[in-house]
Image (tube, rainbow, N blue to C red; front, side, top):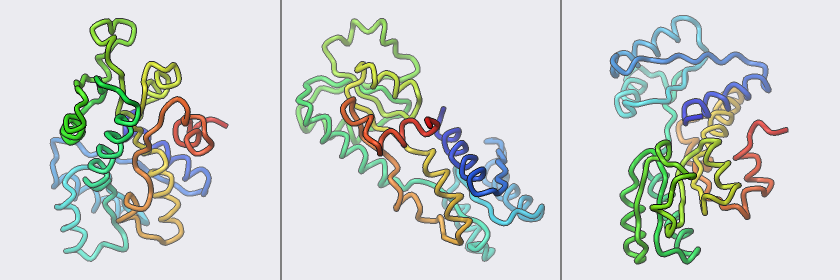
Length: 221
């Protein structure tokens, strides 16, 4: 699942646990910020007790909330850019401790800061798109240690099979669950991502700890 699907799954689970109704409304990318704002207004008019926006146009949405005195009804949920920066620093330190010399990073977006940090540590670094990489046909990278930044079940599978040496895992499922839980107790979610871990860095040895099992296998009973 991707980040949005994990976030939605967490929110749905919380809704079941807390006996409340959560509706998910998608806004077309072509609609832009005006479409986002129109969607917020429409949901409020249709009786939503609270609207949480998880998407683009953060600054514009926050201005809309402030200018219309809607902070008691609408919040924008996002991870701070600092979360990514801190993750990259922590992941670079983690990789350095494994004494690797050549890193292949599988991810679906660029992480320039991580490359910069690894270069400073004299660790050779290459990156590839996770979805396009074949673990079965990776002879070209047989001298690389493979790491990933991903939150898919496939990434967890390859970590378990020791095809990945380490994984930075974004925990959107818990963020979705805790968002609903906070709203039902009257707590603000504006700075929730700063108080809830967004990324976990894990290897094969740590993935089956109690904490990480709850993160990596949220549907396991």
